[in-house]
Amino acid sequence: MKILVAVKRVIDYNVQIRVKEDGSGVNTDNVKMSTNPPDDNATEESVKLKESGKVKEVVAVTIGDDKAQETVRKALAVGADRGIHVKSDTYIEPLGVAKILKKVVEKEKPDMVFLGKQAIDDDCNQTGQMLAAMLNWPQATFSSKVTLKEKSMEIVREIDEGLETVEVNLPAVVTCDLRLNEPRYASLPNIMKAKKKPIDQMIAKDLGVDIANRVQQLKVEEPPKRKAGIKVANVAELVSKLKNEAKVI
Amino acid sequence: MSVLLIAEHNNKNLKPFTLNAISAASKIDAEVHVLVAGSGCESVAKEVAAVPLVKKVLHCDSPNYQNYLPENLAPLVTKNADKYDHIVASANTFGKNFMPRVAAALDTSQVSDVIKVNSPDTFVRPIYAGNAFATVKSNDKKRCVTIRPTSFEPAPKTGGSAQIDKVDAVDVPNFSKFVKREETKSERPELGTARIVVSGGRGLESGENFKLITDIADKLNAAVGASRAAVDAGYISNDHQVGQTGKVVVPDLYIAVGISGAIQHLAGMKESKIIVAINKDGEAPIFSIADYGLEADLFKALPEFLSELNKLNTIQK
Image (tube, rainbow over the protein chains, first blue to last red):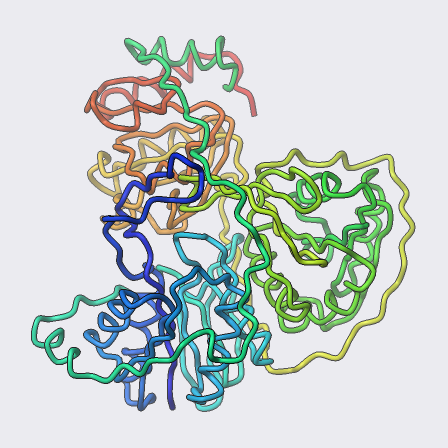
């Protein structure tokens, strides 16, 4: 069996982002970038399935400018076999990303596509579900446990009420929760080896799909700042403030 | 111009967040129709019809929709989308699961997690875990929108009498199967909807010490939260995690104990109405957003807090 795993390059989750003064977006110049965290879980799970012997090949794909290749290299360094870089210098909405991934799926014919449940930059939480719909495949979103069977997967999903278990026939799309696994770090020898693994390149606008954005970003601003309140001297004062001033207890 | 809203329910009762979604939908357009798809869910259709903001209920009853599998639900929504300009659902694990399938089928770019409706085509949504707000305009003819329930007041529940139309089920693909659902059983309120949340961080130093937190939570009828550091350290299970990688909560009162206030934690709780921070480090970032800060050793402060609460004659529930 074969897995396609999709990874995205985003601002590192530890960075305090800065909104541009002209309201046109978020500053990405000279900011630390890394792989979208749940995409690392998607790669880890794919590699684990390969190590279990049930999966023969793991192909990592990314869409973005030349630097986006770093995310594919990282996936190769932790065990993916080869990479695909779909080049695009402009932002593409999840709808367009899903259309591009569908093209890649048609070419690669994987049995499963693994993605992170959500990117931590635009926070859309759409791509995996859209891809599944376009392929007419089943989906398992927010997955925290994956059991691969012969022709299906049993998946435990994190839902608001607790946990839900579903069984989806293959081929299927899986979006990964952070709780799915603990992504490994790449060892130095594996980072070196990854440099020799092949990355094919495609050009997004040459794929024959409509990737024009439909949602226009009018402005980006900082959320209203919360003012620091007061410090209380002791517990009795705290309880009194909560009871009589804030009236919340 | 009308809105089709997809109701979330358990086949017996409407889930409360649907009322918040109804009030958000009514800000897009007053003609709000609600699709209630489920199995044996007639009582839910009636409950929705009584909501005054709802103008019509579409009721589809079939075993296919008993467990809201997105592969089954999305084609039903898509088929009924013809007459509507907007398809709306809550941005929780229910809405997030099926709505992008609908958007893909309609070839429309979804607008996720809306916190404010400026006009029928312009919305405000948080990006970067709430560290920035984007105002976006959808240029699609048909718009799929998910709304953040906690950003809208729930619609009043009674007084209306909308017409209930039956709609037919559609063919299902039969390639996914519901196996089971294990709802987290807790005597305490659910973290995502609790009026008060008491959260502990690394400062608690151990899982046993979390009892100091749960004692206060029980006294206040509050949910128990935790920082990622406390979860990673194994003090408490990850379903308690508040933050960018956990749950986003907006309670009336959020009490952060032994939590320094990492960016990713603040993203999950800084919209709370009143924030209390208890931390021995007076320089901790959590104090910069707290309405009431107490610089103290939590191992002394929490037992005192509990005894002060015990002295109160009444505590709001």
